[in-house]
Length: 280
Ligand SMILES: Cc1cc2nc3c(=O)[nH]c(=O)nc-3n(C[C@H](O)[C@H](O)[C@H](O)COP(=O)(O)OP(=O)(O)OC[C@H]3O[C@@H](n4cnc5c(N)ncnc54)[C@H](O)[C@@H]3O)c2cc1C
Image (cartoon, rainbow, N blue to C red; front, side, top):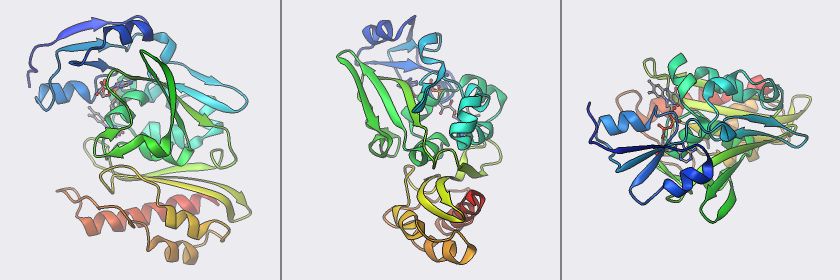
């Protein structure tokens, strides 16, 4: 449980952090995924560039079109934010379920999506929210649509030397009616299966619907066939059950000592159904 030695640098601004980053360095956010990985020697690094004290990326800003969450915003600050609670209630719901108080006070949303653990909560929520990831590098800034961000098992569209400075959550009819349902690993509280769902409703029928699922496959994903089958149809048990047959289409379902492939797929159906019924 002792990491290989590394240098430590503390940055006071994003530009300073970018100038400190080299090929053999990594940024340190809340440290709640990176430090355990270093201690277990699953990862090693020459220099850690600490961005956890940069106030400019910790805030949550509300405007007419979106709520912009700083890449360094902690899970706890998201759980407590009133703008997000009305623009996208699933954000607060998900944040409350992450780990324990210490994890929520230290861990950040930017760190979580950069790490892209297949059982992490934010990837499912941000896919459902149609979020945009704001990324800075030495050449400037770029924005990546969340549908293009998660590329594989612990893999993202983030390049070396880049920092997630913000995540934009659009203010839409579907995000304001959104929920998160999760079957937790009892010790860590990571998702064995987590489902975020949002839909703009016309009575009991969704005019639009987005679903994000984590824990089931090697990366969080949207079950597009389920979304398509239910848009314009009343969200009742029969219609949902009929649509859920396609939930794992196109993904390779994970199996481990917590849950077999069959049990995980069953959980994904149960938790997606719960989430969809709550949208009504
Ligand atoms: C006991 C325990 C329980 C947990 N339970 C849950 C849970 O229930 N659900 C869940 O989703 N997660 C859970 N986590 C993970 C936790 O949410 C972490 O905080 C999160 O995964 C990583 O965020 P961080 O800020 O700590 O990142 P760090 O650990 O500091 O970094 C993780 C990776 O992201 C990179 N990085 C960090 N910040 C940025 C940035 N702004 N831009 C670019 N790259 C960046 C780092 O270089 C590193 O590669 C748990 C962790 C622990 C220790």
